[in-house]
Length: 160
Image (cartoon, rainbow, N blue to C red):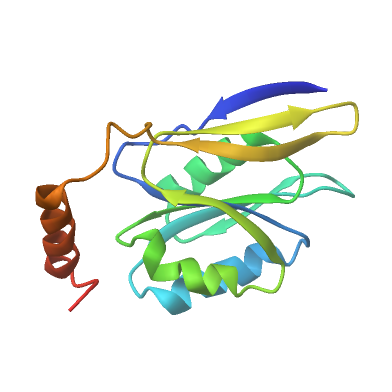
């Protein structure tokens, strides 16, 4: 077995969700989850089929996001993995709906950070072992950092 990493290729300000599911129906169900959860979202989805034709299946309502999804899913190439790229929305806007799609088994990350996907590959195929999401911590927050976090969450409307 070989272990390698695949860097997610995307603009710095674009968010994405990477996960694993178990059925070809995933693409259409994720599309429905995105549009019903975040009106105005622009997105693209790609799903790596793990049997049959083993194609990268895709959907979306934005050409740029759809091309990002297809390109990155092809690079990852792990069976039953999916990736959703989005703009005009954040993962928090659709993550609950994505988790509630019956075919979804795992969410590996939901971020705009630089990400590398840790892949295991053998003669059968590829699987996602995990992700390296962003950078390592520089320390522990102090009272000033805690106050900043508290204020920014309220500024964005995530907390009252």
